[in-house]
Image 1 (cartoon, rainbow, N blue to C red):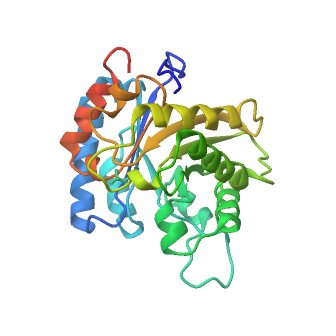
Image 2: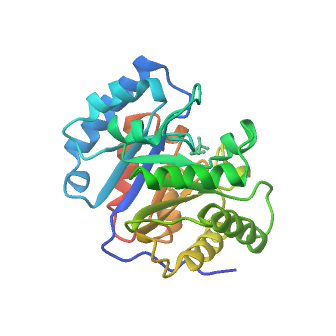
Length: 264
Ligand SMILES: O=C(CO)COP(=O)(O)O
């Protein structure tokens, strides 16, 4: 079992990302964003950059969420993009258009797309390249599907990471956010155990060590992440990738408070 000593640099910001998935309709997405804007304005740690927030609403909610977050430091992103930028691709979403619409980040490779929409490793790789090509920071999701030992989970997750990054050529060193999301822990009452997360995150960091394509790499934990997760993880991760447990802005505010507690 690996120990739980912090592996993040002490002065790095804590990164808290929230995906709304398809849970909230347009009105509720906008109301949520107004609540998050309020948290960002009120909270000194967000204002001074110790906590970095990003929000990934559903696509039709992007304009309203962007408007609600205007003037705050909350970064905007999308949950998916096309591997294509332009052409005869009916229904696809160009990364170039996402960037022009105010997105800074885009999620790639979430298991709900891998399994639910048949996105294989080639698709994930092409989408990651499209993100970087368009100056969007990929939030690359990796994680084992079944509950296996931490060693096997690390092997599965690092293989997904290597496959997604294979062949990537970044003209400018890009930012990369990796979200470790064990599939068996998504949509549950509780996150995966801290020792399990620690071992996989250490392996992911090792896989990214010295990768010159990236100016900065952050590794987040997602999968029923909630208030209490940062304290349990004690600085092992750079932050959390949140779902349901941040769909109430008051809960997100509690997690921001937790992020500024010494030791987290
Ligand atoms: O998949 C997730 C974030 O992308 C996690 O969702 P939940 O926190 O709702 O399990």
